[in-house]
Structures are given as C-alpha cells and as structure tokens.
Length: 294
Image (tube, one colour):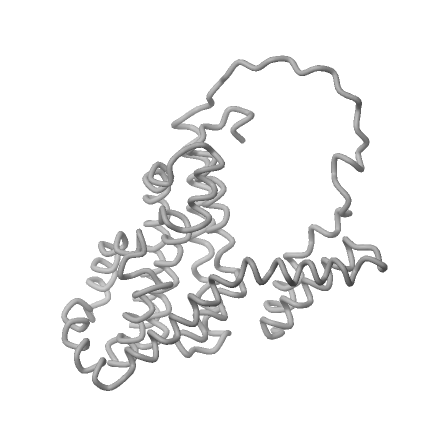
C-alpha cells in the first residue's frame, strides 16, 4: 500500500482494522472467553457474530474516510535494472491457490458443522500440510511447525495461566466482599447509563490498563460475575467490545507495534488514527449488550 502512495499511518491502520474485522471469527478468542467467563462456546460465538457487522463497517469506513482525507503520497524512484523475467510459479510461490483456503476450514467446521474448536483448528493444520507439502517431507515440516508453534505460543500460554490464577483469586469470598462495593459503585444498572459509562471508560483498556481483558480486566470481569452485578453474558459483551479496541489501538499490543514499525511510524500515531473507529465498534457492542442482556 505504501508503494502505491497510501500514507504510512493509513496503511498500518488498514491492516489493523482488517484484523479487527476478522477478530469475531477467531476461534481461540471464542475459547478464551468461554473458559474465562465460564460460558458455553455457542453463547460466545453468538455475541461475536453480532459484533462482526460493527467491526466490518468500521473497517470499511476507515479505508474510505482516511484515504479520502489523506490522499496519496508520491515519491521519486529510480528505474530498476532490467531483471530476468520470472515464471508465474516463482511469483506465486510454492503453494497452490487452494492452500489459501486454509483459514476457511476451521471456520466452516466450527460455524457450519459446530465441531469443537480444537478439532477444527487441527483440521486446518492438516489441510495446510496436505496442500503445501510433498508426502516425503510431511513429517519434517510438521515437526518444524510444532517447534515454531511453541516459540510463538509460549508467552500467551503463560499469560493465560496467569489470567486463570487471577480469576481464581478474585472469586474467593474475601476478594469478592472487598471488591464488590467499589465495583458496584461504578457499574450502572440502567441500560442508557451502562452504555454511556462504559463507552467513556474505553481508554482504560489501552496501555494494558485496568479494563484490558488480557490483564486486570479479566479480574474485574470475574468480580462483576461473582458479585452478581451483571449476568455473565453482559460481561461477555463488555469484554469482547473492549477487546476490539485493544486489538487495534493499544500501542503495546503485538500487532499494533508490528504494523507501525513495518510502516515506519509510531504506535501512538496508529492509535490516534484508529481509536475513533474502534471506539464506535465498542459503542455498538455496548448497545447490543444493553438491549439484549440488561
């Protein structure tokens, strides 16, 4: 995008908004909220599907508005030396086109056939292996993938263990009794106030703040449920809506840092550009939560 004149911040934001549009279909996210909030996966999936139109609309709106506002950026370039023409096979890589359907396989199984999340993900791995690897190289590639997966997933696994410890701690009787008055004081029961208050609190999920669902926010969610302040499905609406903001605009999240650095801008610039759009997504999620569960 940058090469064809899209401004750097807009290009980075477009990648992140695209990730956010697909976030409601992330099967590991379904499993995380199902485990953390002790809700069945179909309940989590149902709310995620309600959140998807808001995320998609925000992503499309971001592209349309930002490209129109910022225009294109032109730069001088040197004519490259004539290189040896490459074949179409080299341009496309080794994998055939139908290997690109790999992300669709788990979604079809989980959404269409209601297969459990882990078997659906494993089916996607097997499909990717069969469509990209020669039979004699399958064992080698599968082992390399397994080792690589441990490197990528080790930190999130430790984080999820810590979140589990935090959730168990805040559900202890003494913790609930201590935190209930404070949490109840800032937790409105009126649907309109519910939407207004939690919309204003959106910035608290940035910079790993207290409403970040992959940190202290998980503990607050546990208190809201354990103290009976909100039903678990309403807390699900809060957590998933805040997660849409965190996944795009938090300058400390992995994808935000990566996209900003790759584009040559700062994460804070990306945050300022994308925050109004994901804030609107969170507002939509809160409205659905208030109208459906309160």
